[in-house]
Length: 160
Image (cartoon, rainbow, N blue to C red; front, side, top):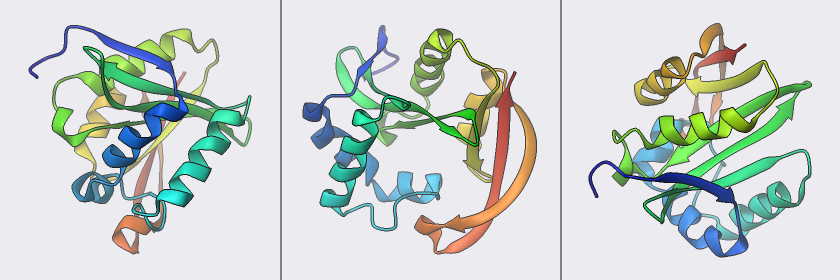
């Protein structure tokens, strides 16, 4: 595909779930993300999770498209009263700036700060995205990562 000309976000729809499921259970991406569902191949659990997210007025989930093709998602929810964001981009589209562009679009419409993000300590690509967007690392924690069946380092970032 090359570098996309247009990265856009839209509210996630039921019709997006088939593609998001395929993107979300790529074994390399799951391993990199680390903090995932216990069984990324469980479609019923995936659908139930996404339907809960889409129905929750306090959660904002968007489908990321690059040149009209669904390539991932971004989302915001609240943890302990602080907005927390995440993104997941199809591995076939890593390294093209899509995650950075999508998250920048998403953050531009969020009128709240601070915004927190968490990332596996060895996920260099996601760390680069967060730091490029102005997030600063504020903590290091350790938590159980389902995808690795182990406790690993998790970095906590904040955008003020």
